[in-house]
Image 1: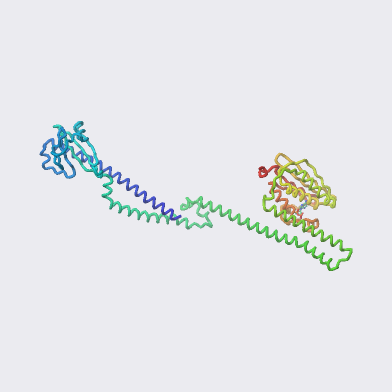
Image 2 (image 1 turned 180 degrees about the horizontal axis):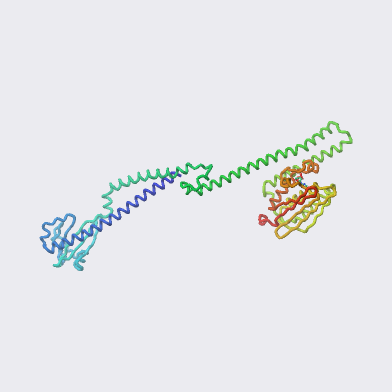
Length: 453
Ligand code: ADP
C-alpha cells in the first residue's frame, strides 16, 4: 500500500509542477510577444516621424540592430532597406502590411520564415508624401525559445523530480505511520480521533467483525461443550442398562438363578434392552435434528390425523396406566414434515400418560385458525415445578430421575420435540401445577415461507 501511495503522490506532485511550468511559460511567451509588438509599433511611428522630417538622410546615421527598416514608395518600389540592396528588391505592393498602410495609414502582418522556426512581425505606416515606412522584427516561436532554454529547464525539471520524490516519500511515511500504529485488538479507541477520521468506517467494520468472530467463537465453544456433555451423558445412560443386562446374563450363565426366577430375569434383560433401543433411537433422531433443516421434507399433512395415529399407538401404554385419552378437534391440513409432527404428538401424549396418576385422563385437542395450527395436550398428572419448566427441554434433564427411569423415559423426548417445533418455526407453551396436571400447547404456522416452493 505504501508503494501505491508513494507513487500517487510522486506522480501528482511532479505532474502539477510540469503543468505549472507549461502554464507559466505560455503566459510569459504571450506577454513578451505582445510587448515586442507594441515596441515594433512605437518604433515604426518614430521612424515615420524621422523620415517625414529628414527624408532619406534619416537613414544615414541609423543603427537599428534588431529591426529591419524598409522604405517603399507609393508604387511599391523599395527606396531603402537597411539589410539588402534596395535596387535589387522586388516590388512590395503585394505585402499585406504595405497594402494596409497605403489604404488605411497603418498595417500589421506576421509571416513565418522558410524554416518555420522564426516568425517575422511587420508594421508599416504611411508617410504624408504617399510612401510607406516598414519595420520588421524577428519573433522566436515557442519551440525555438524552448530549445534555447533546454538546459536550464532540464535542470529545473530534474530538481523538481528529486524534490517531489523526497516530498512523496515523506508524505507516505506521515500517512502510513498512524495506520501502522493501529492496535487492531482495540479499534474502538481511534474513533473520533483526528488522525483516523478517514479510516473510521474501516475501523468500525473491523470492530464489528471482531465482535462477530468472538460471538461465533463463543458459540462454537458452547456447542463443543454441549456435545461433550451429551457424549458423556449418552455413554452413562447406555452403560446402566448394559451393566444390568450383562449382570443378569452372567447370573443365568453361571446357573446361579433358580428355575422359577429364570423368566423374571429374562424379562428384565428384555426391558433393559428395549430401554437401550429407545435410547439409541432417540439419540439418532436428535442427531438428525441437530444437523438443521436437512431432515425437513415439507408435505401436505393433517395434524388431526397424525394425532389419531399417535393416540392409537399409545393405547396399550394408556390402558396399563388406566389413563383415558380423549382426542378432539377437526381436520387440520398444513405443510409440515409428517414424521416430525408425529414425534411431537407422540412425545407429548407419551409423557402425559407416563407422568399421570392411575385412573387419570389425557385431553388432546387440535385446533386451527387462518395462520396457525394448535396442539394442546393436557393431563391430570403429577405436574412440573415452576423452576424446572425451562429446563425440561434440555437433553437428559428429568425432574425426577427415578420416576422417569421407572416409566421407561430417556430424558430426550422433549429435546426432540423442541427441535422439531423449532424447525417448523413454531413455539411451545407450558401451564403446569404440581399435583394438578400439565398442559403443553404447541403452535405451528400452517404454511411457513420455507415450505412454499
Ligand atoms: P423423559 O424420557 O424422561 O420423559 P422428556 O424429555 O420427555 O424425558 O421429559 C423431561 C422431563 O420432564 C421428564 O423426565 C419429566 O420429569 C418432565 N415431564 C415431561 N412431561 C411431563 C408431564 N406431562 N408431566 C409431568 N412431568 C413431565
